[in-house]
Length: 86
Image 1 (spheres, rainbow, N blue to C red):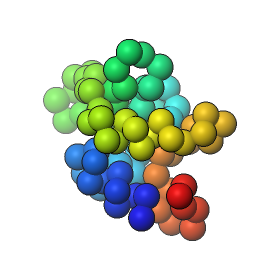
Image 2 (cartoon, rainbow, N blue to C red):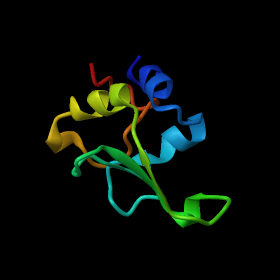
Image 3 (cartoon, helix red, strand yellow):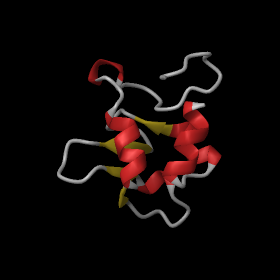
Image 4 (cartoon, one colour):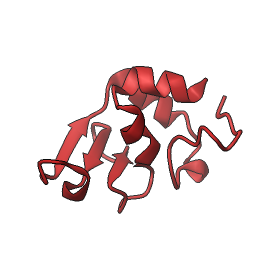
C-alpha cells in the first residue's frame, strides 16, 4: 500500500507519519518547494523542543512529488480513508 511504502522510504515512525502534512503550519510538514525536498518538524512536535529541517530520502521525495499538486493539502497519509494514491 502507499502508506506502507511511505513508511519504508521515509523512515518516520507510525505516529510521525500520521501527522505528516502538506500544510505549512502543521507540526510535521513536507516542503517540496526548495532545491532539496525536506520535512519541517516544529519545536512543539519535538521532545527536545527544537525546530528541525530534515532532508527527505530520494525515494520518499519522488513518491511525494508524484502526488498531483491539487491533492497536496491536509495529511500526507490517510490510511483509514479508503483512498489509495496509486
